[in-house]
Length: 135
Image 1 (cartoon, rainbow, N blue to C red):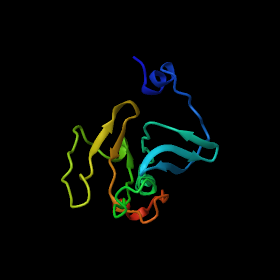
Image 2 (cartoon, rainbow, N blue to C red; image 1 turned 135 degrees about the vertical axis):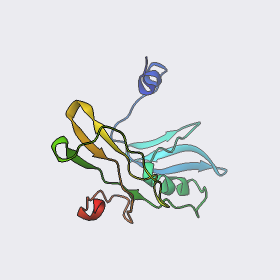
Image 3 (tube, one colour; image 1 turned 180 degrees about the vertical axis):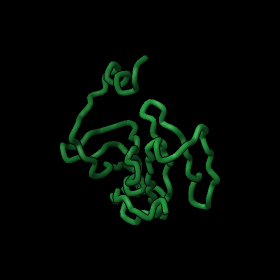
Image 4 (cartoon, rainbow, N blue to C red; image 1 turned 135 degrees about the horizontal axis):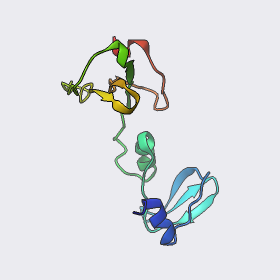
């Protein structure tokens, strides 16, 4: 089975690493290219895959300037099997801001995972871990 990138390369796509998106090139309010730190490139389609920064990218195209991504982060907690005895998956109770915390065994390593909590992250690049995450 082919992966999407391999399929794209087999169909003539050139992969360029180290190219940072700077802006869109617009003509009559339509995207006709992208401006990068490695030059300008024309295009028929543009796919916004900027993750938590995708709102900023879409704004550069003039799309929904009122839309803003409010980022959240999640922390995982791992317990050694000697610290807890459990034989089942415990399903979460959703909250107003998350799907809840899922508890399950990672059998090959004999560890117990508590799936992520959900906290506001005002800084999109904030990847810090907190001790109060699982209090």
